[in-house]
Length: 126
Image (cartoon, helix red, strand yellow):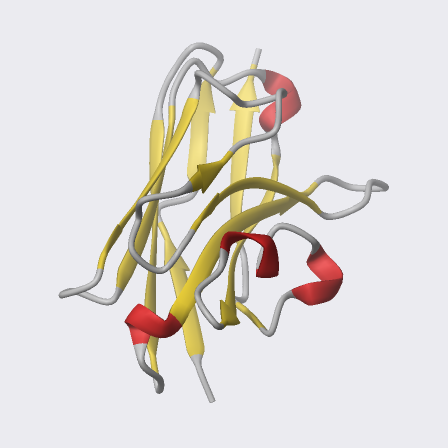
């Protein structure tokens, strides 16, 4: 069983930056594809970034492309989400997600995700 623990959320002004971290334990980290999802009140949970087992492939939806970056450190069992040029509409609870197999397509749809973190709140003020 894989456990995911996020950190780094908080309150930031529009235009600012935040970096989220997620530490995984209980499994083989390099076997996992990883992603960050977010869920705003009254909205569906949506993927904002994903990365395959090696870090060689990534995915970003158009809403965050060019503003968000994802990276993983397989030695530290950690995945990061760097968020720049934040907008008020980026306000949400952000969740770390992981799927076995390591392939990008296994972690870009919430129904396919195997493991979830508890979430961390990100609030962007205007």
